[in-house]
Image (cartoon, rainbow, N blue to C red):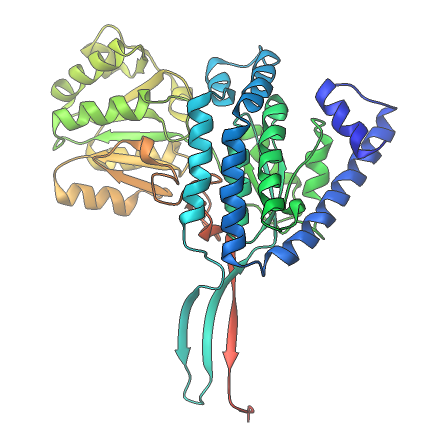
Length: 439
């Protein structure tokens, strides 16, 4: 089976031959894509900043020029995904505004400083050696993600900015949308004289392509999974390649007894309801029991009026009859929907204990005015992003000034928090001398 046949099968959802033949063909196809990416990465590593920026600008123009085509392909994806929940459909859907934001994101990445070649540190040794640590590309990055076609643009462009080739495996539900977007990115590469194979999309929905990617140790240097627990668990258990994880966003907002009531209300409403399907959306509200009677009523009222389902512990249910009972599963659930769980805790120590037990090390926020309490919270909570008196919806690489992100890494090795262009680099040491020999 040829690559063309596989791409056609992916679009139609059919198979052209026996399953074994299909699996062999997919394995071969992924290997070929990986080798082309490896060759492209070698060229891209030395590409001048001007060429990479030209490719990004041209890709942004192509996305704007072809927005009708992208929307048409996206509509077909949406129509074929009727079994998805409303939050996942929201993640999948593209409109003119989101496409405009996608193109603008590419231009913002273009304006970022080129991380490659940056001197991270430099020092002189007593023997006259001059040592520098400089940024270099990781090489080939495999990104496996679900639902959100805008990740296609973010991932491909960030990898390009950092001098990496990328192999993208988007969700089957966004296959047509991602294919149209990748076509724009590749046209941008071509117009800048860079190898188009620097950005490739696996042209099949077949899940076996994921396994083939995870075994491609001779071509892919890093795997970045972005999706639900089942995807993350599969990649973590099967991958023979180093993984930068993006886990669940079980995000907490803690309202301390010293919180400003108006700030508390506004931060909670925006954290939960601005966009419920993003990983930075608040899922659990913790409240200092010493001030729950005064802090919670306006917050609950505002959440209810905004259409949010509220679940809570017994003490919270007594405050407002609209609060439904919560059970233990609610504290460990990423709803990605207009649902929030509320628990009353024994001050900042109780909030820290609750987050340590149920949190996912993604993003957590404290609303408080007492400086010592804020310091205690920020020092003790072990999450990639910690916030004070600000909506958790700012947990986003674009809002951090990174242009965009591949995801929020909740691990501790290599990258943590928003993964932008700088986080998609490694480093090497340059040692310069004048003929020194070691005694």
